[in-house]
Amino acid sequence: MYAFILSLAVIFVAELGDKSQLMAMTFATRFRALPVLAGITAATALVHLASVAVGAAVGAALPTGPISVLAGVAFLGFALWTLRGDELDDEERDKARHATGSAILAVGVAFFLAELGDKTMLATVTLAADHGGLLALTGVWAGSTIGMVAADALAILVGQMLGKRLPEKVIKYGAAAGFAIFGVLLVVEGLTG
Image (cartoon, rainbow, N blue to C red; front, top):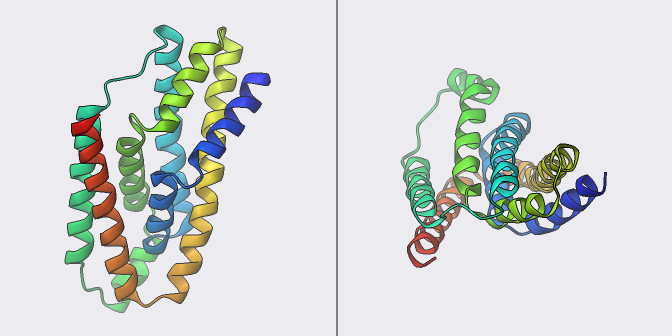
């Protein structure tokens, strides 16, 4: 239980203001909240499971440079895709609002790539390296996953509120700028780290 509570608290605090939380807010302006949260949860559970395995096995972090560059390029692609945009008629717009599979996949892949080598992943590796035994490692995984999802759920709420109050063009350019900034930061981090 100690490993669970410690991991939940550490990761929740580490996630506040993190790029992942900002990404959650950005995605929430474009997609419904539930698919965004589902994508984040799936990606976080996988990344933190891998983090716990790495931490338990060797107590060391994965090489983050190439992964960060790959994630950065993906985010630059998301920015261009957002700027290009698509025109939807009313029927297509209604279908898009109700489509969950593509939103879950887009959010999940983006979060998975962004979290590889991120501070929350490295914190989870460190927590797992410090806590041996299957029960403690399960606590680290569950606590870190729940802590991150809880922090990102707050960002989703903010993103949903902004999405209802801002004009579509502001959301489009803001989301594209956000993805571009994340992409550049990840590429720079990967090349200099």
